[in-house]
Image (cartoon, rainbow, N blue to C red; front, side, top):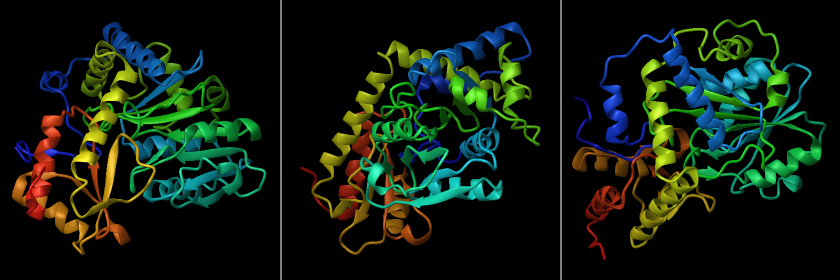
Length: 359
């Protein structure tokens, strides 16, 4: 099988546990029955607990990629009377900008660089915005934003708050209630460590009240909310991934809960970063998440050459960047079923690549 014996350190898909893989190998069952409805209800309950969602919150289950969740949230929850402040710190921030532009949602392209937005009150443009839209972790560069500060900002200015948490859920703290978040977008193939193909949009009661009538069939939230009352989706869901999600949520709880998962991700990230300090690499940003480390060569090597060498010579997958950053940075994920011994394989390969003895 393609890449079956490779080590994977990409920020989605990520390394999955054997327990989750075994579920994926089984026959997909029929789903229009009460047993599968119970699975949906269990998944909804588990997700709401993980993000500390306000009472009355709901989950939309979309058989689609994370970008579909981003677009669906915008078209169902914002309209032409809104004025969205869209944080744009990289490729995925730009994607939110493009979605707003595509659907004629009035917005401000809030370009930021080298900041976690702790001082968003000072940096944000002054205007009468109705909503704030952000990728909590800008995965294209490994930039984590301060959701506590942003939560205070939206509370002070009475803004509707949409957060893409696709590459920070399970590895970095997020709390809907404490951070005044109205919408969280999550996806299966990153911190949840499942196959790609399932996206979840978590709606607070305020967000549910905001859901509007739209000229769209597949991404109509009203239809999903109605079907969700009976534990179903309006169209065929990613049945096997939802079964894996149920098992994964139970696994997280069995292992000590989301706080313990975040703690383990932090330990892995810190171990990796400390272990490579003797290599000619520097961190691209000062505001990295537990989920990922973004590195820039300091010896003149091209980042893409390091990525290609690790794949070709060591059967290790790390993540390249595209565009202007192709030669500047590469990314190493700490999401999924990571252990120090697994990470050691990558660390040793990096030292071998540079022909430096590891201490």
